[in-house]
Image (cartoon, rainbow, N blue to C red; front, side, top):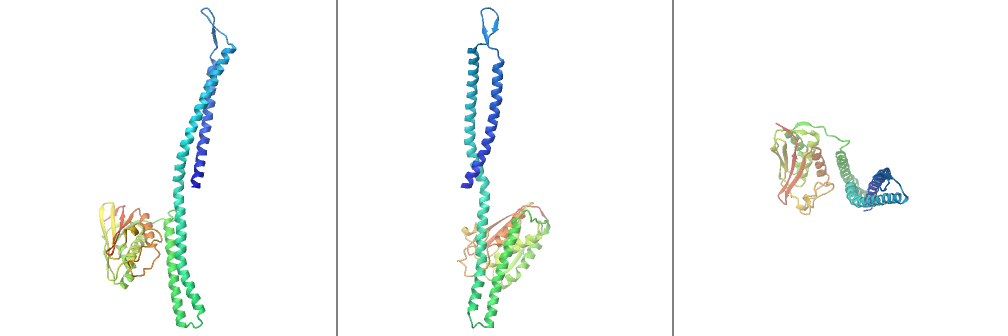
Amino acid sequence: MKSYIKLTLWYMLIVMAISLFFSCVTYQIAFSELDRGFRQQPVVFRTTGPMAINFPTDDLIKARDDRIDEISHDLQLYLFYLNLIILILAGIASYFLAKRTLQPIEEMAELQSRFTADASHELRTPLTAIKTEIEVALRDKKLTLSEARELLGSNLEEIDKLKNLSDSLLRLARYQDKKSFAIKPDFYNLREIADLAVKNVKKAAKIREIMIENDVENKNIYGDENLLTELFTILLDNAIKYSGDGKNITVSSREHSLHIFEVLVADQGIGISPEDLTNIFNRFYRADLSRSSRNIAGHGLGLAIAKQIVEMHNATISATSEIGKGTTFCIRFKQAIKI
């Protein structure tokens, strides 16, 4: 609130400085023209007879000066009320302008603060686990070689989590920095991109006995091949994590018009509740897993990265879901598709 008031006062100060400057200039010009016009007129005293004689008297000169002073006072009063109105309007307009100016900055600061807090929490968890395991092992004087190996293996798992988290954070920050990161678009076969993504998650799907069906059409889409492959890989990996063993995942496509094309990734997983559905693309957000008995790994960055990739392609992403029946992600591309 203090920032709003300070910026509002600065805006008002600038507006009033400009207004007072023009008021002073206007007054000086108007007063000079008024004074010059009055003084150029002769002071006339008509005598008897047909002729009028210029006869300035002290009374008439005083009356003329009084009239000039009266008009000058009225002009000053008019400019005063005009500046007062400008001050009131400037105050209202400045407040809304200050609010509009500072709101994106405050939102970015809030997001940055929340991001820092969330990242610190996510980093602290594996570090705490590593530290605790090592401290317990150091106190154990009867630690065997096999137990030490098991400890090191557990530590490596936590280190892998840290590495994956740091890599995801770096990618997300890189994609969000649109000034230094630019995509390299060209026309690529959409089905081939989907095939690459399926291969990337093939091992994880095989462990869970999940079948992935690729029904994407053979069409060329304008975009960055590597980023689109990463996008579909993230969605497929997410679908595998939240699907039951032996379920099916489908990647399909449909065309709405010449310039609108959709790709859908549908699973038969646990589904997402309506209250979670509105937040799944936020950083570090993870849906309530109380309805699932499985411990699903992840940091809640995958869908945030997916959304950034989608936005870099001037596309949109949305999700529909039903608890216990599955979730469908839909990416709508709004650029030309070549057959």
